[in-house]
Length: 629
Image (tube, rainbow, N blue to C red; front, side):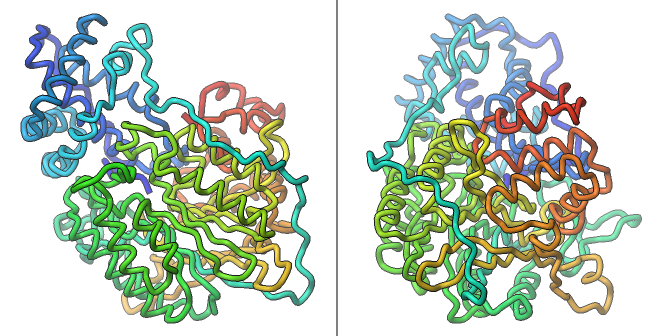
């Protein structure tokens, strides 16, 4: 899930200093101001993302915008604060050249951090205590990233002064290599024979355990995460946090996760579990490595306790590290590396994973294994595609060689005649553009081999359709995005169960159906009530799907375009049975439907036919505004 930030109920940060500020450009002052700028941008980007993918106050579930759009909102405020309104392009490039040289010669992390805290407070990015804590967490890594030459002077000045001074495109295009083996003709899977075995796969994602959750605390505090010891008591006019969780910017107490796992009986039995990360809470401004490891070991032990011998296959979420989203590629060594986290994961998950899977997990947080004969499971570290992983500013070209490794795994599976499942945390449509487009190419090339894809991260219940690259019209794959266990923000706790073509010779291993279960917090928090995890819906039955192949999901999007009642059903389930009180009007509905077609990042063409169809003339006013920036 996106990081943290102001509550959707709070106003956006205001501009900085008033007119009349000092507009002189002393080189030493600007040297440090430039370094602070980089850190402030990183913090502001993280904070802006935590407004979540849907804003409950406005009921607009827009996907997260990429760096350029968010930077265009942030940079003008920074220019005001620094008094850089009259800065010329040549002077800017000279100053940033000096910044690069100066920092490499003598990086002063403490000085950069102190100034960044002041700037965070001045821009009202977060409450003062959060500003201080989050800067102290980020400053060392961010200065190290800058020291490794993140921005050229042309890129930095293009960011500050516009495209006439330089080009802000450090995430340049790149391509992975596909084998020369010709792609087999597309062959849609055949329905399983009546009576064929069916596997039940439990899917857990975004558990977000809050160690400091406390019943009765303020659910609408000033901090990015509430319902906790430091949140204070709510006003007398408002109730405090519920015992099992709360419909607000709050995560879950351990007892709710325990209730989830202990109440799985009616949904089982399970053949295996896919678990796609985000274990710690959203209190990212003061997390330590010790906090993250405590969450990892505590929740892993809880899962093992209640699931016993059922094999569990995890994936790495963006919240597992600290600072949040910080996943350096393997060439970063020493204390800045992710070795501390991957080693702990390998130790915690050793009972579930074979030796070769543990080896690649320790290197880059990804792995492959064979749960059954004929099925290959690939767990990707989607943090290497993340828009918020600031380590990718050094080099975003196929970090850790993960996509090239994926191609090798898929080609080997095709050669053997195996089918493949992919699990990961961040969905491909939410990734950096080049990563996402390369992944899209891979999915298209191996459509016959790739049986299913499973992701989390958005906390809501949705999907992403893949199309042939030539026409973007033939649905060839679908990624399922399951809802979160956590309530963050304003949701019921939930989990998913997938019915999969089972373990037998010739199985397609495709998804046959899925079921979603929730805990209704309104009922559960009633005095004297016992928590009851209940079936919310079954996909095929509720949506009238003939099957769960890609074409069925494509057709569902277009059916919802013209059927308001069907869309409202989807909107209700999208939010796990607790939608925003505000209605979802036409812009909201179009954005929601387009998001289901957005498995390729920054590709508005995927929605062109949906939005420009004559049956929705109001869509003309939204185009060509990019929805997926």
